[in-house]
Image 1 (cartoon, rainbow, N blue to C red):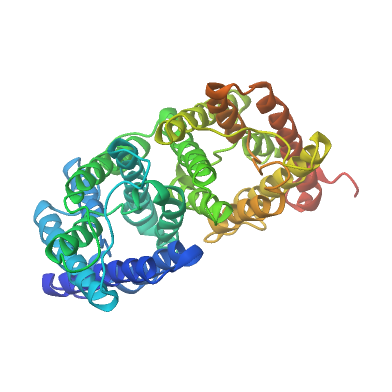
Image 2 (image 1 turned 90 degrees about the vertical axis):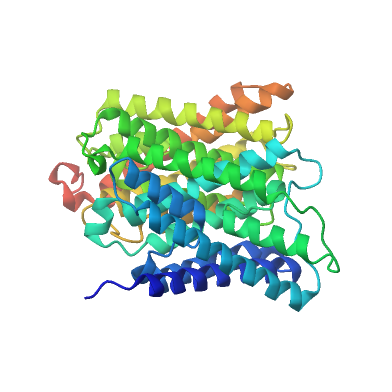
Length: 457
């Protein structure tokens, strides 16, 4: 099949970026409410599936820059000339879309930190979630292994980053994560003073933070996948993977809780889903000490030795604690406690955490470890959905931690405000119990894969 021409590729990039920014504007100005983030994520996802085979479906100068840096480092990506052309066309599509929704609604969207936040708070959000977005793109759409295997989850994984960031960081920075979005909204505001909207000029700092995120994404991509750059994989690749995945998960937890997100459980689940798809073939994408313990106890992964599992757990907990101090920084020292919800006691918390950590770990074992029930494409969505299940079902009882790294992170940040760290130990004990119970049940339901597990022949 012939390679699409540059004109064809540019048309695809213009169209995809135009639709993305138009959807952003219509949701914000039209009062999309709780579903706005999902709507924006979905237009990105469907556009990626529609146009990925034409231009690569970047629709974001930060993504193009990350691919260019990856290429410069000796890995997969696009050349500098393509980066420049794509970025220009993407910005043109964004500006065109912003004038369209301005004409529709007679007003504009303010670009800049939300009330009560400083530039560095918004900048941290833009940097971190642009990093996440570019990192997921690089891993699911550019990594050699995923390109060769033609995995069909790339659009879902990329779109879900927007759900994670929109509900998590949107309350702080507005959630651009895209220089084309920032400059498009900003230019329409500054050039149309008769419309409602102020704050022209914030696109500059936002773009700087977003491009820094792109650089970091390409750097981490090289660190976790040295084989794509002519290097050799080492154990450090897996440890970095576990740190990064857990960090983004716990950061999304904290930002959703502190921002009083209307879709917290779904946003947190989306962050887990995206990072599982990005890093599943690097480290297994556990991001949870209870999951690691369940996999070891299942006996189905001989490569996951006890010393290696302990290293995984250490990096997961470190990632969780680092993330908790990050969200506390973004919210000027604010944090939140672990413990029973209003009207519940520790017995209720114990039942809730054990049962729903069991659900999470059991599904991991079934869809990602078992050779009989493994889900080759839907594994990330299945595992992430367990967080939606638990977060909605028991969030009011225990908070729905389901993860010792989350528990340690929350308790670690709460120490800043007089909290007690011992609660993380109680939660972790419950969560490990749920994980080990999942391994036990898994050995019964999936005994056909291992004759040694046939306890009742």
